[in-house]
Length: 395
Image (cartoon, rainbow, N blue to C red; front, side, top):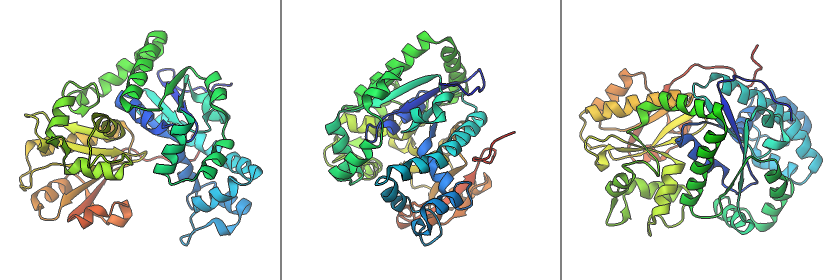
């Protein structure tokens, strides 16, 4: 396959696998290890937005009936068309894939981190493969795939089978891979496979080794704060946010909203490991208590506070200031466009502090996380990083 030339001081991992294999959590694991993550599905969302380069092409090809009441493409309507018509799916991919590749290249050029992981279900069938230095395939047993998709996406057996029929076989993907990760079961075993593959790639590839060192230096400020399954204080963090082996309020919320069954009733260690891999836990060790732990969701363009145990006092403590500074640096490293920070309505000093740092009040519907308002919080947003045109080819 032809390789698109990018910077020689970068290393790009292409992450692929069939639907339901768990690609996203493996991408998050690689981000915990120091990679910058690109989710091709999110880029497809961007390409489908009104006023995007693909929008008019999509309407011409599939008709105005696929639009919702706001004039945006309704992905569920579009999916019903393309997954019942092979030619319609090919036409959609011919429209979207070049734009997704353009967006990925633009993001690669703008990230400061030298290791990039691109997650894409059709990676090997698109020009994205030409960007990659190494292809990692995520696999899972067919029974596990069906169970995940029926539970997490409420898809029935026929729908799942139809989606899989439009994707290349696991065997075909394996033949083109450099690394295969079996993500059929225990999340800790998956984490062990990912870290082993990371270390083995480092031994085999000098450029990857150099990139790891560069990434480690850039992310050195996170060393004592970001929690991963092999952090020295992983067990301590686990202990302080659980009481009597039962999840605290933050973990209850995450468990209920993250498709991890029964975490709020019957806690298992691998449930916590999954949450740590899926989200980003930061602990301010001074000394470590539940009040020092925050949980963040890193999407493609937004970093959102999901849970915290800040004291109810309105004092702007040094730990609070340190948390805000740490998160802003983390967001910049991952090229996010905005940070969303909820503050309880009565904490006026803290609201004043983050306003001084450039955060502005936003409506919950704009952030799609109205649960914060229901819980008595105000939402604040800060735009960070340098903006660029995601879908335009750079000269």
